[in-house]
Every structure is written in C-alpha cells, then in structure tokens.
Length: 221
Image (tube, rainbow, N blue to C red; front, side, top):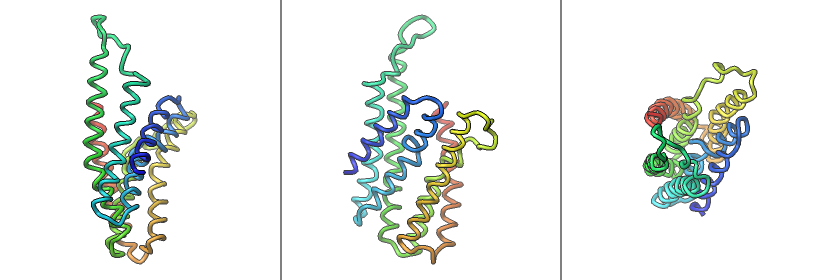
C-alpha cells in the first residue's frame, strides 16, 4: 500500500510540472513539496503500531515517490535532452548527470527523513501523552518548515495572479501542518500537554526552516 502511495506522489509531482504559472504554483504546494511528501511519510509511520514497520513504510513511501518521479523525467518528459553547449555539441550527458545527481540527493534525503518521520508517526500513535505531543509538535514544525523558509508573501507584488498563487501556496505549506497538528491533538487527546506540543512545533519549525535554506542553497549551487 505504501509503495502505491509513494508511486502516486511521484506521478502527481510529475504531472504538476506540466502545468503553467498559477496552476503549477498551487499544484506544487499540494503534490510536489516537502509538506506533501513529508506528510505522506508521517502518516505511513502512524499507520502501524510496529516501530520497524513504521520506519520501512515511511522510508519506502519517499523512496518510491522519488524513483517514480525521476524515472518519468528520464523516460517520459525527457526535459534533460535537446540542449546544446556553447561549442554546439549535445548537452544530453550533462542533463542526464544533473538528473542523476538530483535523484541521488533526494534519495539520500528520503533515507534520512523517512525513518525520522516514520518514528514520529509511530510515537504519536503509541507513545504516552507527553511523548506523543512532542512527536506531533516536531512533525508539525518540520512539515511547515519549507513554508517558513520560502519567499515572504508580503514581499511579493500581490497584484499579479502568479505571485498571488505563490503566496497562497506558501500559506498552504504553513497552515496545513497546523491543521494536521490540531487533528492529531484531538484524535490522540494531546491538548493536556499543549506546552510540549507548542514548544516542539516552534523549535522544529525554526530548525527545519534553517535546514531547508541550507539544502536549497546547496542544490542551487
């Protein structure tokens, strides 16, 4: 089941790339973001009471999503091909190397984030109220971190539809994790430990935002 969920994530992310401007900005936030993929991994971990199974399901979800996405890029869209270098020669090998590098980067990220999110989901399901509250808060903070690390909406020219969509996508990446946190707190009766819940969310969100900025800077470099 988790393999199919990961494959669906990869497919949806690939399809989002084919959209233009406003639809693409919104679709990316929903299907092709750290929030979407991280939430899927977290819920995969929460879906089982077994610690090892939680790690395997969460990690497998992210790995399968990554592989499906980049396989579609290589064999379907082939956006790596057709370019030329300054000397007029084909840039296809350069493009393939770039795709291979990005695949390796995100697979490595999946192998790090998958176990962490899986264990957090497992802790929310099986831990004591304080432990579960801390795990839920950390998960919420990490899932919202990409939004906090993104472009500040108030710095965008919001009179243009594209930037309105970017602002909306950023808002989704920040607000949705807190909606999930509220659901988890209600479902698992964690409100009695709200200081732990809030503190963990703030700390993880701040730390995660810094890590996202470092990651994006490294990838762009």
